Length: 304
Image (cartoon, rainbow, N blue to C red):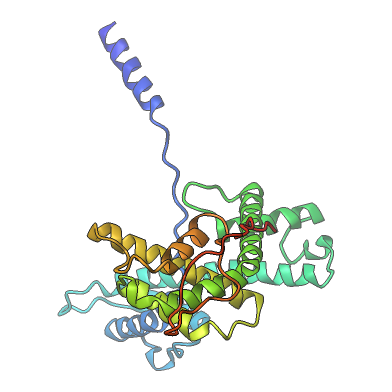
């Protein structure tokens, strides 16, 4: 009875631990030329009878064919500490894995190009070694899943669809943000001018100086929606950098209490649109006076 209970306890513990899924490991981009050169050296050391016909590095498939054909003829040199035959086999396996990954991606691209050109799924059946248009569709989805899945995810059509939906949602969010930032550009441009005029009263670190330099170089050269949206982001990046620097130093972010440029920029970044005078008044000496108009109108940020 004691042995039985022990077995039961062990099996219950094993059942309680979920089996880890093998993550999809991809080689990605590798230095194939370097690997082929090493493989060529190994074939020379192993006495490849056809070594003089070893293909060029850029002919990867022919290299693998040659290496596989003459692998059985390689011999281990007695004076070498390197396992010539074994290392050559490992390099061949790595290059075949690389080709497989490239083949999957290339086949998927061919399918997508064909579908974009109006080719029905049924016409891909023979090329994909399936018997129906549904089979061709499912195989294409699995190829897609292999390209996008994360560790722990399976190579299924559902995974491909989830990644596509996620990517589409991210793209919609980026377009919405671009639209909002472009609409805020006129105010961002005016805020940028105020920051440039009053930069001497603001405590800057290297990041704030970087953002301010971007603002100074591009403030009058923003023509496209993307450029205007990017400029708005630079103004916000400058404000965040200034405040982060002040928090780290536990010191004020400005050295002049009379300058409100940073306050307006902060309101623009973190709250609603700030109220900035349409025409910045100047004193008799010509200096800019940053006083809010009494009848300032706060406009809410526009939504896309």
